[in-house]
Image (cartoon, rainbow, N blue to C red; front, side, top):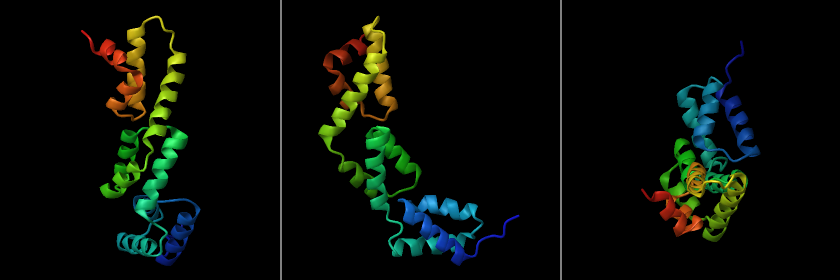
Length: 161
């Protein structure tokens, strides 16, 4: 069985971890807890890492938003939910989401929908449009933007009956 880390060792390891990639406080708290660090020491270590600039929630949010759009191709809703799950401040999340370029965001959704549309057989246009809508929603894009990218006719056809 491993010996628990001393607070100083935990601080050193946490700082090294934060140096390799952006981390938020909840990730570091979870890691410290798994390492067997006591709760008061966890709070002290996280506070120290914040003071030294190793943890910066606003910077983390900006990085997270950029990476999820660029590499995972997620929409605002999915990104926002993931950041809330990490217990990040609402203001930092909102500020990071506000930095998304609307033109490139819509272009990303267009590309995703076009790629998905090519995978569909096209035998039932109504069913295909519903599939495209569900696909875009599952990626975390907002309903209004999805309908504007699909076009008003797609919305009308999908919502009849």
